[in-house]
Amino acid sequence: MEYIATTKEKYVDSEAWTLLEGQFGSHPCLELFGLLVQLFCLPPLPFKDSVNIAYDTLLSHSHCVCFDVMIIYLGKRDIIDKSPLRRSKRTAEIIWGAREEEIITDSDMREIDLYSFQGLLKHEGQAKYGETFRQWQIDGPNFVIDGHYPVRELWVRAKAAGTKYWSMKARLGTEYFRILLQSNCGVSVLDFTPQPEGGTPSICLNRSNQTPGSPAAGGSSEGRKASNRIVLVFHGVSESNLESSMPYTGNGPMNMLGNIQAQKIAELLLDLKLNTVVSGTKMAYVERADTITRVQEAADCLGADCIPRYVETKQIPDLDVERMKNVPSGWLNRLEDDITTSLWDKSGKAWKHLLYELSKRSDGQDNIVIAVGHPALHIAMMGYCLNLTKEWLGSFHLNAGGISVIDFPDGPWGEELSAA
Image 1 (cartoon, rainbow, N blue to C red):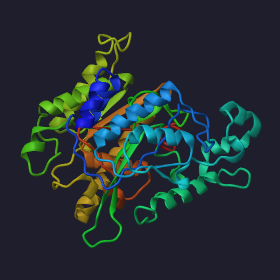
Image 2 (tube, rainbow, N blue to C red; image 1 turned 90 degrees about the vertical axis):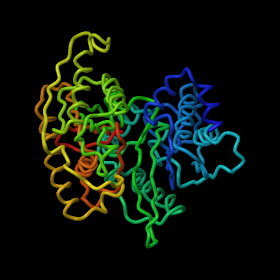
Image 3 (cartoon, rainbow, N blue to C red; image 1 turned 135 degrees about the vertical axis):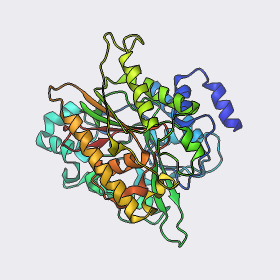
């Protein structure tokens, strides 16, 4: 905690610290069996390849500093791995600081090998390779260059890197390339929970692609313009969370912390011009949706827009969950089969409703739909988004007051990209 206090004193006036306190809270306490981080120390480039060039810019250094603060909030660090590239070495050194333990170099952790594409700017790749470049953009798993399949090779190396620390079962395949995004100096956290009977631990995605910037800012995914977006918002802490043995029903009003979380998320979403806010019918969901709507419609008074905004609001029971056992979200797949089946079926109806809302606007303008509901339903809807089955319910985690951003660069019925 002394190091945290020193770091806070050093960066106390920075916007990054204020943002991090809003995302992680003032008293973090996370016991992690594993922490996977993609270490990049450079501004976004046309091709994130394995060219061994160090971009030691002010922006890249500030990314690393903010990244270091974020890692402090996530708790103890025991081991750090890096790729052999110089920019990864620089990033790792900033994060690791003066610790005596060795920084481990692992060749399998280097970025994707793009062969003849490496070092080219985007317009150069388009001019020189034409259809091959287009295939790289839209069909990464089948993209071939110089007799190599770069994405498939990347998957083999990722599996080799992972099996150094845990037993690896078959997980997501190459078809998920670019679906779950990882930005420069973005943090993703995996929790590993040992099984009572031994064997492979259960793995849960605790956080995904958290960066010093706002997850709601921008409007592109991997360089592709995304005018359609769904943002899943989990309501803030409510009185029923504290008093009930079965939390997160949304059946009670939000407490003081919940109201603060709701206001912060509403302010965060001012970066977006929302079209529709859909919520469950429970009190906490309605309160959170109302807070978001009121802040949106006051955008002109708050200096976020020059004209008033109008937001359509709807309430649907498919975003409600009546009562559920008090289990962490990473354990949802351990509930009774009838409960998970009911949850999965209800979330499927809610997901179709959100896609319908997203498809109603066809004038080429941005269309952003907010969904406020139960975290278990949000997790299940992420499963539908990723074309998974209910057996994956235990693979994702959501925090009170958190959001998940899903971009649709190919429209509401095209392939989704989960941005944050």
